[in-house]
Length: 144
Image 1 (cartoon, rainbow, N blue to C red):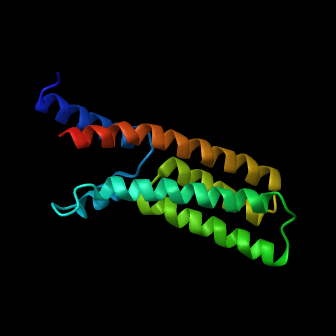
Image 2 (image 1 turned 120 degrees about the vertical axis):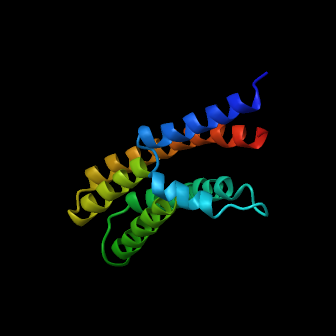
């Protein structure tokens, strides 16, 4: 069985790996941690859970629009979806996902549908990778 010090060291190392591997922006994650207090010890975890739930919904909206020709209202809807996605990603500082979303926006402005679809696949993959990365961290935190 791990000692408390061993768990704490593991937590510190896991969190540092988020930054070292480019998954999260350190200052953004630290700002979220500063919002956590004794009354809401799971604040950061809750923010991430909401983020992943929202991502699922946003991905469905984007996929629905990618299957159509984008003109007029659909174009404005897609623009709104992309910038809302970017805002969600910025809220937790998910750097790899943000890079993919920025590519999607760039390709959208260039009207490059193949580029948008490729970047979207990257965003979905990075979102899944982030989830796999942070879930054990939050589980470990609950044991402390």
